[in-house]
Amino acid sequence: MEKMIEELCLLLMFLTGWEEESRQKPGEKIYRAWKGYLFEVLNRLADDKLIVQFANTKSVTLTEAGKLKAKQLKEQLFSEWGASYVSNAASVYGLIKARNSFHMSSFRIHLASPCHNGQPGQVPVA
Image 1 (cartoon, rainbow, N blue to C red):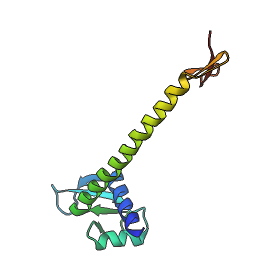
Image 2: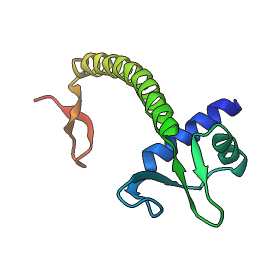
Image 3: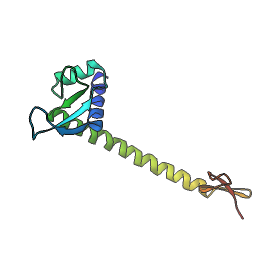
Image 4: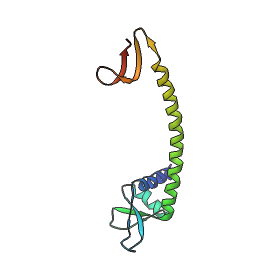
């Protein structure tokens, strides 16, 4: 579980971070992120050489290895999420399509049609 937390924190730092000019080496770009994570996690990421921490700063610098690992995690996580999202969306679409053709006495359920209050719902069939 700890490894998963480290990976998620690294990914969040990458997703919310920014690129800026290095103060120590002009002309060089660095990737920074805020330190808003557990110090134990930040320390382990620094020990693994994925980030660099400086004393008395509110941000960390992602190393090239840290950026590469975060990009891999992003592709892995979002491709898995994307696949399940597409599958779930297809199931929901099938359910909506089935409900749209449902008849009950003089009402037809139209999920995409507004009713009297402007919200989707039941609309009388003329």
